[in-house]
Image (cartoon, helix red, strand yellow):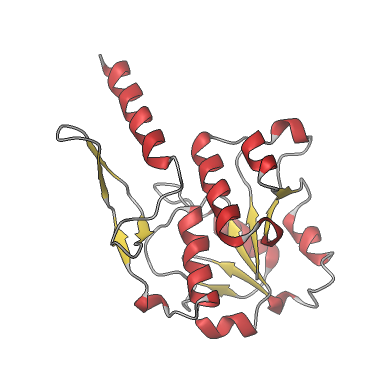
Length: 208
């Protein structure tokens, strides 16, 4: 199972680095492709953490990039995860599609229709992951659970807009849907909670 992310950011925020790092760990470096990086991007522009994990990346546009794949015979073997699609992703889709494509940073809030731009370029089948916004790593994780664990979307345990509490005085609400682990805890990329806390503290310092 191959996962393709069209990177629409100009660079790599620490948030994005943590998400991409977690995706590589979840699906394997050989199964993740990061495409459409800004022209002129070199290895020096890629965060060391991602290079060390074996990130596969290219500045090539997603359309010719996928067209060059020898295991792709036509666009019907591609699936774009689109929040505006009419059909939810199903376990049986593993038999139909080879590449699952995610447009930009799905975790934008409020969401922007960047996936719509990608849909117009690819003109391939689309599937939906429910009706609430997810972060990129959550979208890939949900796709992996549905396809590789053959679990229907409605049987996956989620939490919507979870509150992260740092102490009795500090908390923040995340405006996305997350998968829950076996202990009922939202699954965040490693280091994400600490990053959010640091950002909150920085915002508090700026306020004063």
